[in-house]
Figure (spheres, rainbow, N blue to C red):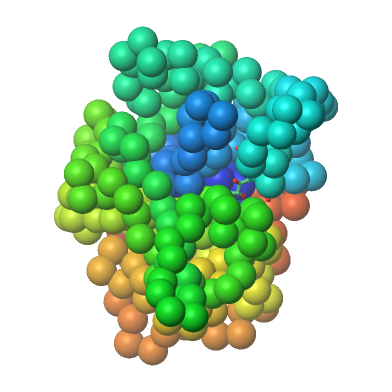
Length: 325
Ligand code: GDP
Ligand code: FO1
Ligand code: CA
C-alpha cells in the first residue's frame, strides 16, 4: 500500500510515528510505502541559518531524537551557541535554537549554499535519522522558499510579521486580519510530490494545524488540484480533542480566517477533497449535515498520548479509508 501524508510539525509527526508502528505490527501492511509531504511555510532564516521547523520536527520525532515534552527541537539539548550570541547582543533571542539543532541548520545551510535543493538537503538529513531504513520518505512541499506572515491591523496601517515572530514572540496575539505567504506565487511542488499524491492508495490529512500547516501545503500551486483529482480516498483526522486544539494556537488561526473552531468547521476547509473524517468521541458536533464525507468518532479520546494510542488512531484512519473507498 502507498500512503501519502500531508504534515505540519508535531501533530503530523506523532501521527506518522503511530502509522509506522501500526504498519510494523500488521502483516497486511508489510512493505507499505509511506511518503510524508512536509510544510515549509514556517521556515525562517536566523543568524544566516535556514531553519525548517516542521521538517525538523518530523526528522527528530521519526528518528527518536525529539524533545518529547516540547514537541520541537532535540532531546538533551544545550544552548551554548545562543548564549554566546546573546553575549554579543545578536538578535533575535526570542527563538530558542539549541546547539544540536544548530548542527542541523548548519548542515542544511551548507548544502543549500553548495547548490543542493531543499529536497536534496532534506534527503541527506533523513538518511542520518534513519528514515529510509524505516520505510518512510520525507519530501518538502516545495523547493521554492516560502514564508508565512501574519497580517496585523495597526492604528493606521497593517503590518506583516513573520509567522514565527507572531507565533513564538507574540504568543499568537493579536488575531491576524489574514495570513499571507511570501513566495507562494512562484512556488511549485517539490520533485515527487505530485507523483506521491497521484500514485497513492490513501491520502491522509493528519491532525495538523488546518490553517498554517495543511492550509499552506494545499495552497502550493497544483497541489490541491492533485489531491482533489486523485483516485485514492482522502481521509483526515481532527486536531481537536473535546472541541479544543491539543496544543498550539489553531483556534486563533481559524478565527483569523473566519472558520468556526469545531471539527465540522475544519472539515469544511477540506470539503472539496475529503472522503472520511475521524473525530474525537467527545466532539461536540461530530457531523456536518449534508456533507459528502463520512464522519466517524474514534473509540477513545483522539489523543496521541503514546505510541500505541497513535498507532490505533492511524489504524482507524486506514479502516475509514477502506470503508469510504
Ligand atoms: P505544528 O506544526 O508543530 O504546529 O504541528 P501540526 O501542524 O502538525 O499539528 C498541530 C496540531 O496538532 C494542533 O492543532 C493540535 O491540536 C494537534 N494535535 C497535537 N497533538 C494531538 C493529539 O494528540 N491528538 C489530536 N487529535 N490532535 C493533536
Ligand atoms: N517554538 C516556540 O514556541 N519557541 C521557540 O523558541 C521555538 C524554537 C524552535 C526552534 C527550532 C524548531 O524547529 C522549532 C522551534 N519552535 C519553537 C517550534 C515552532 O517553530 C512552532 O511550534 C511551529 O513552527 C508552529 O508550527
Ligand atoms: Ca508548523
